[in-house]
Amino acid sequence: MGDFLRLSMRCLETNPNPWGGKWALCFDKVSGTITAEVGPFQLATRIGETVCFYDDYQRFGDRLLARSYECDKDKRPILEARVVELAAAPATDPTFFTPPDGAKESVNCLSPINHPTAVHTPEPKPPRTSGGRTLVVLTSIVGADGKPHDFRVTSAPNRDFDEAALEAVRQWTFKPANCDGEPVEAQVAVDVKFQLP
Image (cartoon, rainbow, N blue to C red):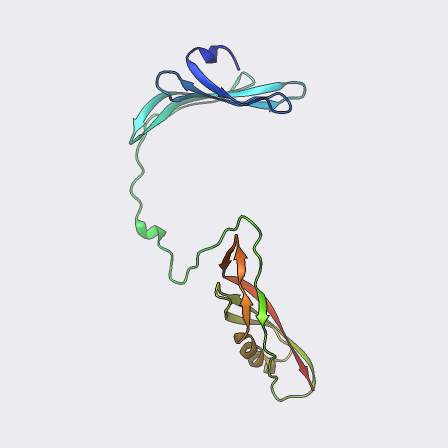
């Protein structure tokens, strides 16, 4: 970083990274405003610098905002901007942020979600029909309390078994999905197998 930056500024620098580049953030010694930001980038045979200068601060509400921006990459200008006017955004109608009826909050987990697992699965009672094996596949939402709801049959070779499969799964209980240690609602696919005499 050039010595001219150090005359009117106080800079905080990082230690060099493995290829020798440093980052720095510089402040005006009098006002304490950010005046420059320096970051390294690697060229084929050397380390270059991107330097951005911030100037002409104006009070806006309870903040100070720079109105002049200039950035150079390897001593070549890449950005020059001047803010002409700062204006507050119009007030937003709070109803824009009201979720619609039936909306559910989405969960964003930092770690992978542990999906629901069935812990109590009473055997289905098949309808009176001919022998053989039948499989009904359905989806359900398992609540944070481990109880399934919102059932939907997705595959059934014999529609006579749909209601029997749904009746069985309504009695199931699950260990709910887990997001960062908290039980959460999640969808699950369920196979209901009928073994007929």
